[in-house]
Image (cartoon, rainbow, N blue to C red; front, top):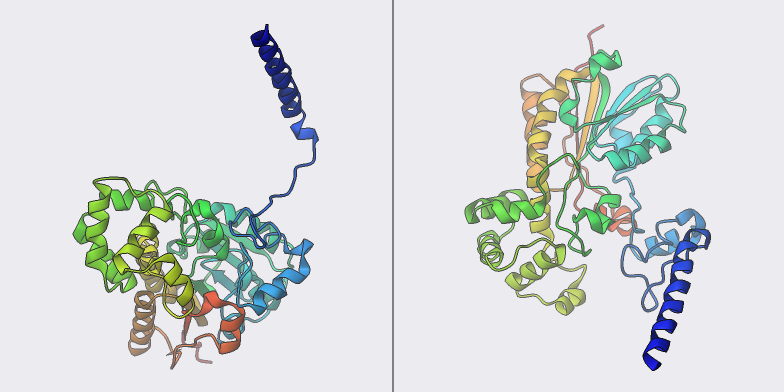
Length: 373
């Protein structure tokens, strides 16, 4: 009898839960709650990802040198506009349009007679950016492509060339902050790192397939990692036991190699580079073929610029900067470009305090010869 009563109670409870579940869609969903006094995970930072509803939060975070989760602040925006000098009626190619931070600055100066042609490999962000940019008066066309397609769209767009070509080689904050992208060592998630979801391989696949020598070379050449050989050896040893498929797994391994604990890192945060920073950067660059695409951009760019056209590139890694510096220098020597930036342009102290993620940014520019009158 007691047993049958227990079954009856269980049945009634199951019925109640079923009714509740069926009516879930009609009930208002409760906001995400976070542990302690401050949000930690990406999902918990719902206020930061809806700044229009919390207008005072952005200023408070910036005062602390923090960037709101998912918010992208265009780097060196004032300097980009100053050196590239967009004018009404000109055509600008934004090769890494992202969320449109720099694009908006260009469009506000191009006016309704100008045009912006944008490129990005991230289809999800491209859709959102299109909605944002289409509110401006400047005509805009966006292409789901990396900037190796710079020349291919000239014909379909009915253009003879661009007045300005611009590329910001950094990864956007929307991509970094989203744990599901697996780009940052700061967030737990799958070790994905694909900027273009059409890619078949993930960063986890690279760690599983590349040889020890290939990994060591990538970490050294793409991120200047001083412990590249030791890191490669430990990755190969670890994958024979357990596949490295999560950001936390790789981060823990890298901290062990560096001999740094999480508490030690927290005490030195802001003073030293995170032990995982260089390796994560190298994997992302390798997976997405970023240096190869940059080389192709540098090859095509001068032939896609109109006379008097300008090109500006922001890099965040010494390997990228070396490629840009060499291409512009050689271009001036052989007459491809008429002039180039005499010195690299870096963020000032005020911008670094406002946006900590801009600290390693470097801007270089070049310009083609004007037509002789």
